[in-house]
Structures are given as structure tokens and as C-alpha cells.
Image (cartoon, rainbow, N blue to C red; front, side, top):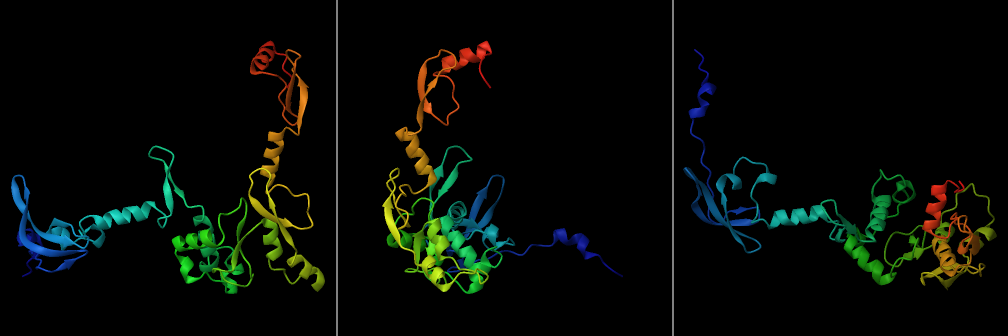
Amino acid sequence: MVVHITRYTWCMPKLKLFVSLGQRIGRGVVIETDLRIPRPGRVGLRAAKLRCDCGNEYVSALQALVGERPDNQRCLSCGCLRRENQIAAVTNHGMNRGKHGRGPHARMQRHPLIKIWEGMLHRCEFPNDPFYYCYGGRGITVCKRWHDPRLFAEDIDRLLGPRPQSWTLDRIENDGNYEPGNVRWASPAMQAANRRRPDSQKLSNAVAETWVNREYRTVTCEQCRIEFQTRAVDPDVRFCSKKCKAKHRRDSGVDDIEKICHQCGGSFTRNRYDKVRHCSQSCAAKCQHAGNCPV
């Protein structure tokens, strides 16, 4: 005769949960047992009192401490562990600088060096990176200290100073590692001069040596007043980028010319590359309303 006892398992008594004094559960240590958490109209939940490593004391139900729950749903601290995990989830290694914008969709502003740090680490440590073969595949590594982004930012600020506009982090010795003493801020021209030359490039030794060891001079940009390096053979370089050069020309009025308003016939000064044909918005509205505005 076969008895299906599974049909009557609902009436079987459940195993009771117990904790002992001094037992460690996560960050808490049990200091008091046999407590009850009151519930209206029902028997209170069996609970225990614990002292967290941070010094706070808290009471938690036994089913949340040693019950059949996954570790990410159990009570492992007074709440400090959850707060630390939340902070770690919304920050990037503690290098964010507060919210940018307002509202629920505001984003955290990242440290200006965190993107450089991520690119450096990915090229050297992650084989799936498309440029790994040029860095990690050649044996180039990142020093152990710079695996921490905060220490990396501290060293770069102390050794190299602020990053000039459009400049990137470059290794002085092309076959060396990313480490203090072997990095610098470099312009696109300096990066191109310091890159490896393929074997198929037909350059003589003398030309190649001259290309790599070109002389540079330090120049102060006339627009943003930031110092940058340029080739010594280029004496007419005055701006660090095309954006600064264009802004300087607009501010100084080098390209300003006299134009004749299409509506009133008056003269006005505008940039020669500007397609405005009217001296004011009222003239433009009148011309457009009359249907005489040229296309």
C-alpha cells in the first residue's frame, strides 16, 4: 500500500529558526535573542537584536537573518551596507562631481580624467577592445597604482597639470608602460610623430630620425591664453585650435564688411561669411511680408 504523504505536508510543523549570542550575520553581531516584533491581530515575529560594525544597534526578524532567502535579500547590516551599494551604483569610483541639470533625468558629471583612464585601461587590459593588439597585445600594461582611478587622477594633476584643449595622454617611450614618468600631454602632431612606423613605410634612417626628434616650441594661444607646443619650423602658429582661431577672427572683426540692407537700403556691418541681408529683424519681417525677400 502506497501512502501519498505529500498531500498532508501542510500540517507538518515547520522548523524553528534560532540564533545565538555572539553569532555574526553579515556586519551585525547578535547581542539579544528571544524578541518579538509586534503585528496587529497576529502573533509577533521572532526577532533578535544586533550591533552593526558601524556602531548602530538594530532589531531584525529571524526569518530575515537566517531564513531561506538569497543573500541579496537577507538583512546583513543596519542599512549602511545598502547605502554604500547605492552610492557605488550611481557614482563612478567616487569621481563624479554632482548632478548636471535638474529633474529625475539629471546626470552625474564625470571627472574629466575618467574617460582617459577607462580608455587606457581598456586598451591594455581587455582583449575584446579593438585596439588591444596595439597595446596589451604588445605587452604594454598599466602600473598597479593606476588601476585606481582616484590615484591616477591625483598623479596626473600633480605631474602633468590640467589637460590642454584637444590634447591627449601620450607615452614618452612608445614601447613603455603607462606609469609615472612615462606619460605627457601631447598634441595630435606630437602623437603622430611618436607613433610606430610600419615596416612597409619606406623612409631612410636619417629622415625617420629627423621626423621623430623634431624640435618644438611653447606658444601661448592668443584667444584662450593656454600654452601649447608646436613645431619650431612653424613661426606663424598663434592659436591652439581652429575653434580658437575662428573665435578670434569673429571677436576682432577681421572679416567684417559693409552690407546694404535689402529693405531700407541702409548700410550695416556684418561678417562677410554671414548670409544676413537685413540690418534688423523688423526690416527682415517687412521684406518677408511683402514677398520681396531674396531666397
